[in-house]
Image (cartoon, rainbow, N blue to C red; front, side, top):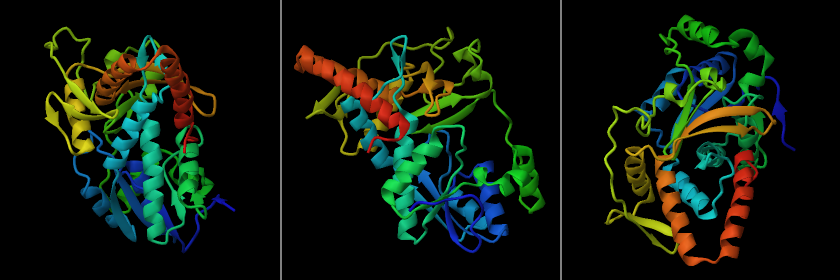
Length: 337
């Protein structure tokens, strides 16, 4: 039976989903100093705001990781993204704009692939940076169990000992410095950002106020299309599908779906496609506001829906939208397997 561990399992191997940020760095170092044996696993999801993936496992080793691995998740992530487009697995829309479930897709891939890597290393306890307030604690729990039925869960942010010592970013930064690591807190933005190569999510802080405009966000995958000084010239784009799968953009055929998605991001990004302002319903029934970017997903989705309407009858299209919305909700909740 699965066990959620309330306190640090001393002397045992613990796998942590390691981003290299302050939270997971402090958690890894704390676990090592308290007598656990941490292993760090980093998912390469093609995040547009990550400059050096190879440096992340090296930092984990410096902070006390017994082992550190970088897992390339890009191919699987893009495969899941294209599958979501083919299923229409999106349920949040506002004003005709769609949230393409890019964070849930990333969590599904991260949860399964990192736990699979841990299992290879004989690591059967998993920790990550999610808290009880959000969606990820349930998503990672379910996807982790799907991959390893014997998995046990330990989350530092649910451990009262960890919270008492390092309950805030200031305390974590001071802890890192006291241990000899010159880890200074980054300058706080007016919102937080989480991303993968399918899309970016900007939320929290000032964006929780509905009178805060999308204009406070600096896009990382596109352009400020609302800024009159940003010139966006018209462009004709062609997309070729084979058996429902995108294979070519503007006459260029791609044998690698990752490269195709990167090019779709570039094309969609320079036109501001896929950026939307949504209010979502978290798994715990709390409301959350987010500004989303997904230029490549939006571009491919527009073309795919056009393809569907040119082939199928009204009843089939109705089923596509109805079932797609249901699948999108399951994907968001982490229950789509």
